[in-house]
Image 1 (cartoon, rainbow, N blue to C red):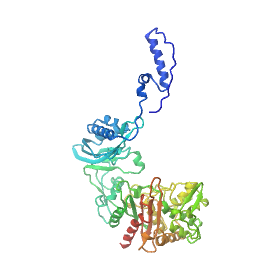
Image 2: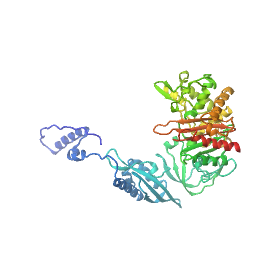
Image 3: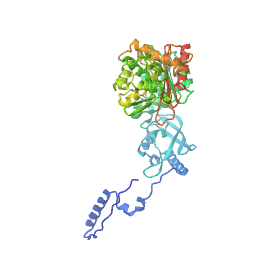
Image 4: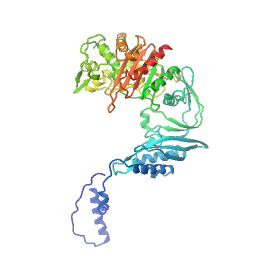
Length: 555
């Protein structure tokens, strides 16, 4: 409760009461004036309530338990308003819990509280979904956190849509009915069916394929409980999600470019690291051969938006080579520090290269050998290079499922310098960086795709120009050097000397270890991976990418 402004009442002579009406008017005017300043007659009568201190500090076990049981019991018994009263967003709670019964047709709800961990309370849900004479049981686990409301200190449930179901984001809704989109049967490039039982990473990919091709593939819709995405989720390009199928529809068939051998290997490789993602593609065509994430929710490999760290130096080097500002074997020191627009940039481990070539700095991933070109560049140069040669940041890729197509915003000063080494405002994901290595390999951007454009006659993205053969040769020279003798050498050991690679480590605020990146090409394969909070890319993402390239070379 905010501090009230204290108002001192002035003593006045008691007015003569000529009639009841005069007394009421005078009293009413006084009340109106006092209310303007935050007081009132009720306040004057109960000053103790006004000055009651707001409770702060950690919640007691009793407060958490009482709040949790009130919320769960009220929800279970259909007392939506009472349940909402013990949350910090009663309107949103009422809206979603009302829809839980009315729109999702969920009945017979039983909520069982689990073992509390601090202020977090897990619980299980058992219910029935019924629609037009068809019923199916529904069960899942969820959780919520009890917090102390700042306005009055009262313990309340910290409300988010995920409390009702863990697959919900704020603004999403649950709906049961005839699905607007028929199911699809997705096939790999060899004709085998793709399922989450076989490939756990592909849940979001299958959702995206259904959303894009369900109505075009000849299937018939069934009845299901599904998550219908709200505006916030639509901005993140999240697809609607089926939670329970009450009656099966007839699926249409969609063939993808995924390789069953490489997909199985990718699934296995990402599980060697926590929060790992990888994409493998064919440079000559753009076909996506494998995509996997160790976390099976959000598809970081296709839709992640992360600073790519030093893997961005491939695009930066392309720009520098095209402008004639440097050549691989040109002498170019890498100072320990470099000042730009009030910022002091450091190299990893405060290293430096006093005498050496640009190729040596690329292979060692020495930051200041790139940032010191900033005074010779315009603010839009890097953005233009990424868009025109690599097809990035145009938001126009059409691979068959939702993707984030990279972002290289125009920036100035120190932020522009940071962009040259993949920090600042630059954002990428493994799909984007696999495409970067593929473009170096062939010299031409081929938009990645998971479903052939001929299936639905969609238009795929194209780059407005192609790098020169000279620039391509220079890029291959520095990437091959990195794979053979630089920071990527350990991971790329055993692969052909014609293969090229680049490592990256991207610093993230409030994260102890950087995100580790690795991108490479070898033969007619290109791949990229990231391990979030993993450390150096050569040690974390590198082995994942290299394992897939080695398998590809053996096929």
